[in-house]
Length: 467
Image (tube, rainbow, N blue to C red):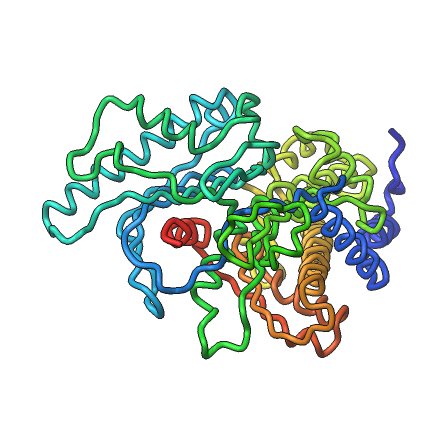
């Protein structure tokens, strides 16, 4: 394939890359229009890129009390925690928690393998809780389970749903068409050892949720009190993956026909990462990343903004610069090492350049890329900045689209509850999103607060279990 970059002329190559990664305001406004159009179609039940999944969940009241078990499975991490809720104005307390990384084998083999891992983690935590309770004797019963399963699920009711698609590189094919809670309780039943004080048989499926839904629930629990002007009706994740959820009146969810739902409002999971339109500023590098992913053609927006893909985009650009003699003197030995460049490296590089160039060099040396001259370090920094800045612009445009969908004239004040490593930890990411919102909305952007609320996918699940 012929390169789009010139040979041995980095200034010209940089201008080409800059033009590719530019996202002007008029394009953002077109993206907002296209984004909202897909939201309308998804709510109507017609063919859409957005599933707009009714979750059967309202917002919390803030009066939720008691102990619950929360499971958070998203990306490559699994967390299990016991959370105590004490009602309004009281910060939720994590009594015990465990966290482990899921291996590729566990995520790729089959459903039984994956859910056996989750069941064992629950068992270990309840055994720890039993030991703790024998010392303190003050921890109540554990029955309700809130399960954050951060993959597309078609909800049947608040605690049951069918897995309809895989994302974030989860590849165990027999998950499709199955109910996560059914798989979980099958795995729990298969365990040979039961705790005495907290028997697995006492656990009840209370709430099945997406991480964006739990983030919104936790944000509302913290922010939606009488003293706050900025109400939380939107939650999102900008981390390994990318998605948003929002609160809507049930009459706006045209495809939702169930009369027995007790509330006038419901949280809807957009599955926003699947957006794709001509207004999305895709490049040849995005196409290469998409083609090499597990699901080519799907989740195009997620593949442009999520941490799982930003390092891959940057790596493709750097490899192309090497191959066209614009970086590292066309040293082909470095190309394979560049494949290990991740969003974490991007973030640390931007945090340490230009202030701490030696630290930046050490990061590259860990990848086997050494020595790195001043000009080469500057080039790598320029490329990472272009990729991360475009991601922040796209994220901001999607936030604007969702806020304007529920409040077209921006007459209300909004807290957007956000979690995820990219939003929370990437240097300058939030600031770039805020600048973009001001470019799009002018002074009315002051009506929007972007709040980093961590642990939403865990604590939010615990709150939902008690709703």
